[in-house]
Image (cartoon, rainbow, N blue to C red):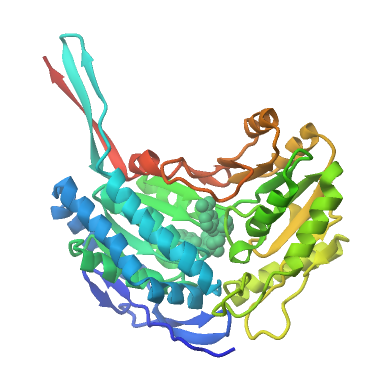
Amino acid sequence: MEQKYTGIDCRHFINGAYVDSISKETFDNTNPATKEKLGTVANGSEADVKLAIAAAKKASKGEWRTMPLRERSQIIRKIGDLILERLDELAMLETLDTGKPLSLSRSLDIPRAAYNFHFFADYMTTIGQESYQQDDVALHYAVRKPVGVVGLINPWNLPLLLMTWKLAPALAAGNAVVMKPSEVTPMTATIMAEICEQAGVPKGVVNLVHGFGEAGAALSASEDVDAIAFTGETITGTAIMKASAPSLKKLSFELGGKNPNVIFESADIDDAVETSIRSSFLNQGEVCLCGSRVYVQKGVYDEFVEKLVERTKGLKVGDPLVEGTFVGSVVSEEHYNKVLSYLDIAREDKGTFLTGGKKAEGLPGYFIEPTIITGLDRSSRCVKEEIFGPVITILPFDTEEEVLEQVNDTTYGLAATIWTQDLKQAHRFASQIEAGIIWVNTWFLRDLRTPFGGMKHSGIGREGGAHSFDFYTELSNVTIKL
Ligand code: NAD
């Protein structure tokens, strides 16, 4: 595979300047599609995080929070504009970092990152406030104040999209932030800091520290960080919660999932197949919302599975830079080994591989063939645990009651998809699923005003529209005696 583009060296961004780690330590950043080095990354420790927090704390009391709303909104909008101006560059960096198809970075990751800013630039100007007139005794009204300093800790699967999903409302609400992107995908967040500065965000309001869990842990434990918005693995969420407990921070968690995709006999099967290709294998299955547990009612089982297998066999796996590639490489060697270990478990559990089941041959990086597994028992770890790769399991079912019990038999509760043309069935079933996000006859269709988040071990709190503002602001009630 020809390496046509290069990465960037990633340094921290603290108090308006790019800086090295105090220790000068760095680690290498690797392109998972080629195993080639993209550059170095500053390895942040507690000392670097403390500097970033101090800068954010000072800035959180400055002009950003008191700036007229319209002015702040214009800066937020400008950030979105600048992201679009640099779409080519950002999309390329995202693809080099993650291994995802360039076409996906160009059509989803980067445009959505820009839209996060455009959306919140508008939304922030529409928010009103509660007020109550208590007879002729008092007038009560609630004002929103920024939380202060917010730590934004993010994963590697949709790096800029997810970082901006937090950064945009945090800034719109008047906070100062410290971003901690994934150590695996540091590049677009590095550019983001520069873009915020160019758009007119005052010095110290946006800070960035690179590094591993240690840097995130230092943010979580700090008395000077007022809130943490985290997206990542459930087990990391637990660690953050523990570390944050002594300082009683506000927490917003978007965690793991093992989402069901249920195809009823009443479904439009061709539609269900087409969308299930995306909900199974988009972004190499590395989307928290992917429907990796597929349940198909027996009357349409053969038809659905046959069509899905045929479509899957036609998916182009390969160089993310080549037009037409649908499945790129998974994000890292560590993750590649994790996904492959689940394929071994499926073999041990006597699963049948209808497609894939192995690494993709003839490619230099961490490529795994899109894999469909049937014949597993519902107790198999492949059916129960989050694999987060291009791997789905399919199980047949007879009745709605039976599948509902299986759908909810999980510690997770992020998303679910239902395929049915029976309106009553759709409402009935959706109302009983234990998940924060439910799609009927579609998948990944989003309106940023809607509540986004998970139940059970998939999250705490909701993001989106007013829900984001609830998290990134504190309400102060003022009572005026009349
Ligand atoms: P991860 O939890 O390993 O890492 C996420 C971030 O947390 C990284 O920046 C990492 O450095 C940091 N971190 C690690 N240890 C930490 C600690 N002790 N304290 C503070 N920070 C720490 O997750 P990942 O492997 O990068 O991402 C994949 C996971 O993210 C999957 O489980 C996926 O489902 C989840 N995810 C969820 C959503 C959602 O909206 N619910 C969206 C995308 C991804």
